[in-house]
View 1 (spheres, rainbow, N blue to C red):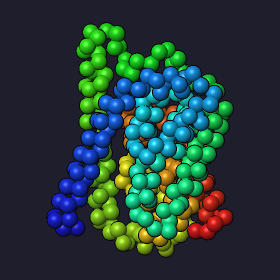
View 2 (view 1 turned 120 degrees about the vertical axis):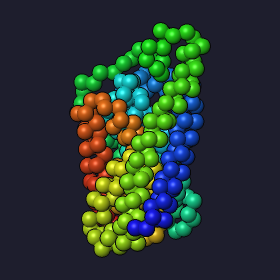
View 3 (view 1 turned 60 degrees about the horizontal axis):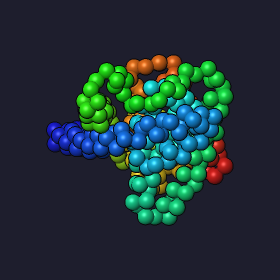
View 4 (view 1 turned 45 degrees about the vertical axis):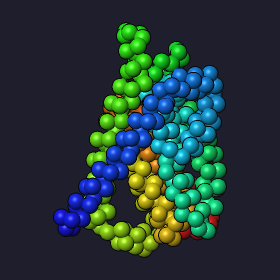
Length: 286
């Protein structure tokens, strides 16, 4: 790897991370104004919240999984509802597929249907299995200890300071992962990476699920590009995108919260992705 390539990887990672920072900051400012209503709806309809979660997750932006993770960490939604959001969220995948018109663009429709149904079913089943969950049903205020501050300072913190700090934290994590991913792909080579996937097509759903675990928009984009170029089948794409929860998973990891819950969520995503990826591939081909 040359210094020129290393510099290009660093600049690309910095550029992509800066775009994520700007997007997450804007999304969190917007979210801060309707977060209360979203939480109230999910709390009021707790029994069918996984259905609302899977529908909400279909919004093709990483902000959906981030909001889901925030609500879960504040104990306003169940682990099943969060998994429903994560399984159905598409990150940038729908946009990438639609931005590259081809005979595979139509596959966006079954992808949406799969993710919606699988997200709801898995989320609902998870809540049936894990019945004892501590849910905060008090009025959602978006930020702890808000009542301790002056009203105007609270509004400033809730709608500006908190989104800014949150975006800066994510920027640091995204930059680190972008650099790691960029150097790995740069060292291996995109063509060699694609050839490896093609030569191990029966393991492709497993490999794509592992790629999907990378908490970054770049992983979903990479999976879509591999699919568009014909390097992976739809089953492998489905496996990777079911696992991929974008920045939402990163929010959970950086929170250093209940490690048991985080492990359950990650295992649920991975097992679901591998299971349905192989199931589709066995029926329709690798």
